[in-house]
Amino acid sequence: MNRRTFMGVAGAMFALPDTSPVSTDTDRHELSTETRDGSWLATRLRRTLPMDDVDWVQLDDEYTLPASEGEARTYANVLNALVETPYRRDHYDCEDVSMQLMNLFARAGMNAGVAITDSHAYCVLVAADGTLRKWEPQVATDVTGRNDDRYTFDDGAGTLLL
Image (cartoon, rainbow, N blue to C red):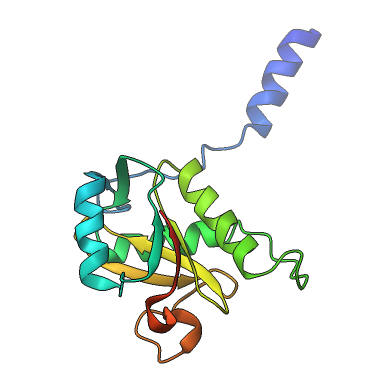
């Protein structure tokens, strides 16, 4: 047996079966996004947040958003796993982590925002179905509806980047 024949036989003996997962429509659910314009977003924000004294910095004219509230939370959970969280007071704290998650949304082709109150910063996720979620990226948690002053604009004052 020459070397080439031997290598062919040896290769066949050690060939591994294809173990790549077979995907069917029932195996996965692709998350979807929808595009909305700035006026649509402004209307939703005014309905949801006390916007009287909030400085809203509208960063874009068009927004690509997760299609639903559930998908917004799914995206946030997945992207939040990529956030580096070496907390350092006054150097890498709440606003830095929030901005990093906002950046990860942008890199994934979507928009997310950062709310800055007088005591804290967190992410704002708006879904194309009109729902708004407040997301705490430091602990990867949806904090919408929490009775916690850190997640409200005291007397309507604060800044929203979106």
